[in-house]
Image (cartoon, rainbow over all chains, first blue to last red):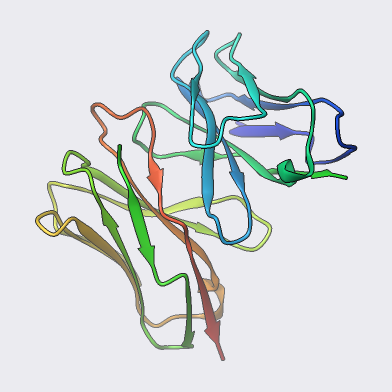
Amino acid sequence: NAGVTQTPKFRVLKTGQSMTLLCAQDMNHEYMYWYRQDPGMGLRLIHYSVGEGTTAKGEVPDGYNVSRLKKQNFLLGLESAAPSQTSVYFCASTLSGANVLTFGAGSRLTVL
Amino acid sequence: GENVEQHPSTLSVQEGDSAVIKCTYSDSASNYFPWYKQELGKRPQLIIDIRSNVGEKKDQRIAVTLNKTAKHFSLHITETQPEDSAVYFCAAGNTGTASKLTFGTGTRLQVTL
């Protein structure tokens, strides 16, 4: 039982490049989330999904897109990376909305 | 929507002392209040949670108290140890209606020898 797996763990991008972060969970959770964590700013919600085929905006959605084509996967895309998107990204999942979250190990993204 | 404020942002205690972290929330409909611990370079992990039908919950050296009238809840760590050094996040939400938790901005706890 792997829990929540994020790939890649580290990535360096140049400004303007695109990339996709993959989150996969094997717990049959309905809800999945993408957070970014920056020093002194806690966990800020980017986008989330309450079920397969659904997505919704969080606090800081600009510059990101997401897709949930399969229940177990939640993808976070950066179409044109900017230095302000340098951060650690965490994926999380839960059975229902306000409940115990299981986090992935994080993906550190640097945009030069 | 829900708004969660957390204080202090940093806290330094000596080993063996107690540490208290406080959070306030704005939505009276919130009924679920978890606390997450994040060690350096690691993922956040749940350490304790409380639901609004109880006022206090304890797990060994960790306790959480909830005051629904005042809309605040606190994390208490007794007999602190160096391994308690981490960032702690509080959160709030409604298990029946909310699709997400709202997090506080975190408290960096440093336990010194």
